[in-house]
Amino acid sequence: MKFKPEQERQFQLWGWGLFIASASFYTIASLRSGDILSVLGSLFFLGACIVSVTPLLK
Image (cartoon, rainbow, N blue to C red):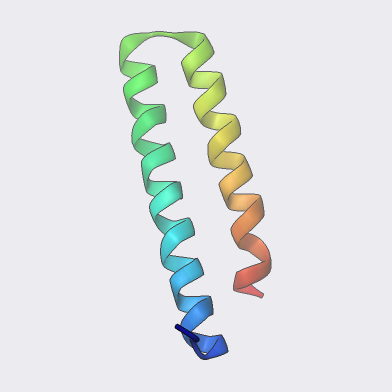
């Protein structure tokens, strides 16, 4: 199946948005449990998601 460039961009934005949401929930859960390694891992993952979505927003 072939998508138009704008449709493909929308799918990518939705996908990255879901990754950012899940990383945010994982960060909150890690903070609540007090596991510092999980907090650091989730923050790195959240940061990587934000860096990866940035080119799509420009």
